[in-house]
Length: 190
Image (cartoon, rainbow, N blue to C red; front, side, top):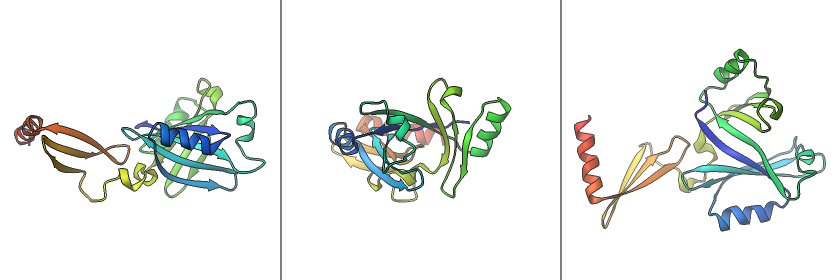
């Protein structure tokens, strides 16, 4: 039912300070972001390391759905965890079979979601979503061609860039000896 943790969402009061911390201190790469005028908040995805992701969310006006969450917090905190599913309808059916209540089912063209309330999920709001992970990444961490891999020669071997199931790519640095062993394995197992 669940493919992976898609992202962890952090609600913050001081958005610019949070962006500076995650981007300039921890090296997060900013990705897509947008404002939701109905719920009065802004969200932006950031990628770290192996394309682990976090989302920063902030209120954009009085009456934001984040007001109550942030009310008694000094700077903010983890708001929810988003789990990726390959099929939101199967996930919903599975939750129903297990008598797990959910709410907020949405079937948008590029994003499908539902939520499990913290009282039913040991204190954490869980969002289950069906999505194409590449849609939320910066172009610098995505493959720009159709192939799911590329190879770059280095002085002592190569860099093997492989499509990551969470979108984007993983880079493996291989010595010349490792590159030759990989080629041998590929030939023997094809």
